[in-house]
Length: 101
Image 1 (cartoon, rainbow, N blue to C red):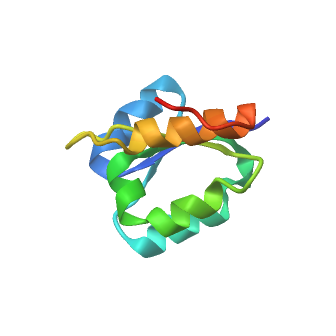
Image 2 (cartoon, rainbow, N blue to C red):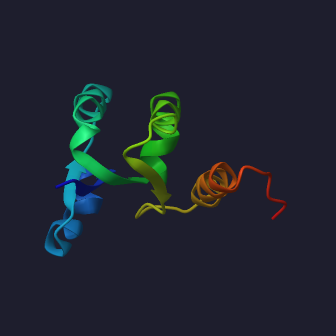
């Protein structure tokens, strides 16, 4: 059975463990790469905006995979347009046409 995980700064994602979601804490690029290499066991991965911004190129590679589905969520520190843009990309890919939002 596939799992659900959240990738973010260690301090800000621990609460997700109480919801039955794997909290995959990242503080360095090496940690991010280790986690990325074992994502085949996940169906859905939520990534905080701050991690998406830090490792943008690495995260972009995940969008080309069928699984896991990758969704960007607001981080504890700030919120930007990254989450909205990520969701827009996913919807456009599913519909096969561009959205004007």
